[in-house]
Length: 376
Image (cartoon, rainbow, N blue to C red; front, side, top):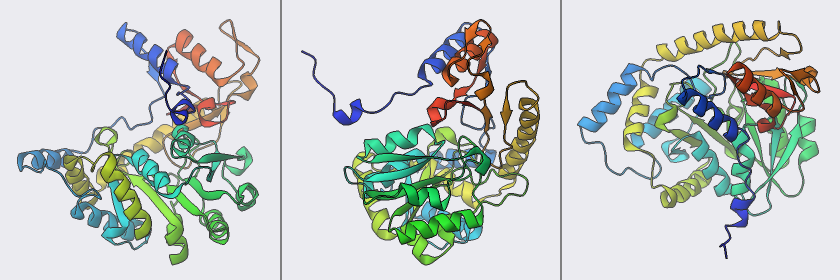
């Protein structure tokens, strides 16, 4: 007799990209050149001054336990950053540092959700959002956005999805996978709807330093003290500082939420890596020139990819305002034959591109929209 796993674990959807990723790695191991557009991480090295600070942490013995909430120096650096760049005042007791922004999201939903609580999630969404919500007892309520509106959820669409069970709305700007960036008034209307309906705003702003064409990133918590108090702002070091493997995320919110998140974290992982915290403090307090240089390079690549994709028959895409993805509409390829294979889905296309052209992409089905693929 085989022992059962939990119902919660059994309901989590496996990654749609797992088989593709496995095939990709097999091809690389066989010496096949694969052109990868799948990875959601910068291809730059972590800036040298950040790497040096990590070595300093090791050499000076900064290798022991820290406070579960994160070091005071790092939390102060985060507060200074949020006031300087986002015009929001927090104190260190309103910050909790975690092992990546994904971990921060998990802690946030663990802190606010009861079984059966609903979270409104705009579609397309980052693949882990729905699963993190389900793992913490919540129910994702998906709202299909419109391409003609830049894949951005409107106030009316949000209010239409709110029920008596709604606990939060999850926003991501700049957005993965679409590259859309919500404008000031778009965010203000969503914030007012959340405030009126007494629900939390979980705002994932991990791509905030990567915006283009002078597009401004707005933190939704900056509008008023009332909105700040219902917002759980999520950010981290991975994308802006090319620190994906370092695993450092953080959340900012009111003290009650942060205390709950910190307590949960203390029992799960104690605290994030001490060396990473030390290096992240140096990153936030240090020169930002390399962050800006990386963003400029991403902008050049975006322009090139946007032009090339729209020159290919049956493909089209919008010009992303942020992040480092292009979301490609493949609907005109549906039911057509490509290299002897009938294309019925984004997964079909992803397989054909990998097996026939040695090109790796992420199928849009992973993000809730099967008529697209994502290119990094």
